[in-house]
Image (cartoon, rainbow, N blue to C red; front, side, top):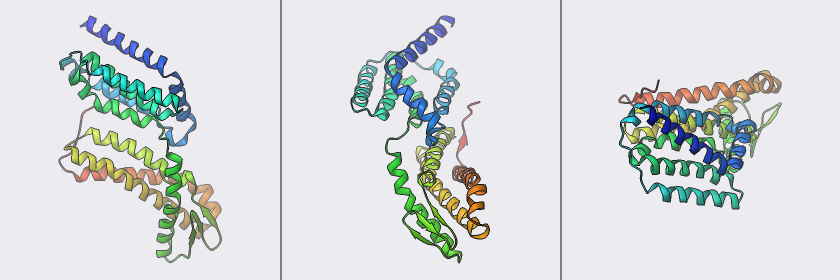
Length: 278
């Protein structure tokens, strides 16, 4: 038992050392994104969560058959090719994805298919630690629609408002839905939580997929409601109150509402129950 534990620790240490050696520039890019990019401040938690999920499976993993699989070698090769493309094109996201592929290949090569299959989610969950490369484009595409939908709601409530692109004009104030208010940050964060939530729920793959995919409209709707609430506050109490006292608070408030909606979607499936991970 002690020898097996020491062997496992040695393999983990060797794997970490290999990844640090091969991906040090990519890892620095990830750490900088987690520290400076407001869209990915949660990124540092993703590998910690994945690590905990693996640790939580330790008893199950000890019971699984462990046979080295040669299929792990082509997986590792594919991962290294993706890494090479990422370096050649200065495409850090590809290099970050390569870490996941190489890690899966190493586990498959050393421990075999049963262990790899059991660890697919903790390994795949690591994708949420990497900033998506087209985030600015997505955020920009959400600005005008978010402004338009919020303006429509405010107009329906009898308050005169006009919209020009991402600009919203009230009677005495003007607002612009910038990239930080496009809803992308909520979408990224809620998708990450939805993936974890779906994994923890017991049920069919179709139910889990429904719960996961529901996070997208929920995050968008919550952001539209946030913009709407800011406009209503501005109309009643002035733009200064809306922006200085309510703007930042509303982000957390409406994200909490979206999260509650996600939990409610999961609750609608009566057959779904939580896995025990503690």
